[in-house]
Image 1 (cartoon, rainbow, N blue to C red):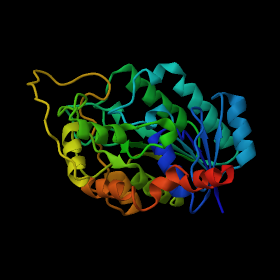
Image 2: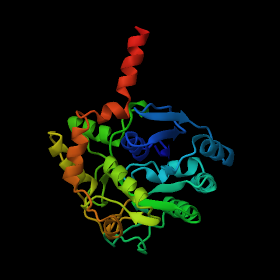
Image 3: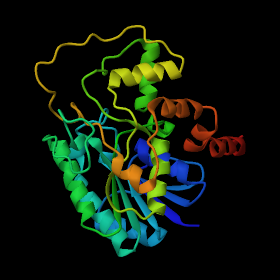
Image 4: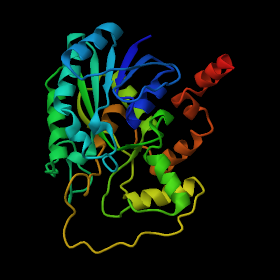
Length: 314
């Protein structure tokens, strides 16, 4: 059985990817945040993103595949821009990708659609409609670091999905709660992207790993949508009611700033490379809804182990 090292379990992408891969690979997951338990995974906390830490974990785990979910793996619609300055994301990825190359492990970096902005729609991999925000510049610098090493794959995306309960309520959980409360202060109809369910992303990057793809690819949902419309579609699938909609205002110029504009992705390159189609949003939302009942959330939060521990304590 091959071994996968997933770095960044504190991200929705990292936690969901680790959960999905755990039935087919030996998965070792790392987080620099609160420790988390995922069913079928070995999970650990690490303290620093330095050379010694990266070398230690690659030497210990000996993975064939490393999946790196740094700050860029967070959905650009919700990530706090301050996260880009609390550590040095470029130095962090340099240490991990260099260690992976030294140990002959393939490296997949989950990046962001927020390097782009409008008025272009459905950006291709080499599109020059680039966002000039400091955060977007950092993401591009991280991508350049990854590209300097062999056997690396960069996936630009914008994921949504469940968050392990160890980290409290995530974006989806907050959104569902806000539907019940009637609070929509963070919603708007100006930003547009192509969001993708995190577990759908996991299936696609596994396929890409098996096909030994390298370079930069866009992996995104099959529909361009804004946060307000996303919430309306979510509420319909979950059987909730949007009691009040925020009022739109007229824009006199294109939105500027990190993830405030048009970041939808064109996926022709990955579709041709893997002979697949991208999931439609309603299909992804339905799978998200089903994960509450089909055991996925129990695996994400390792409910079986928690129940066993409680029985032992009793």
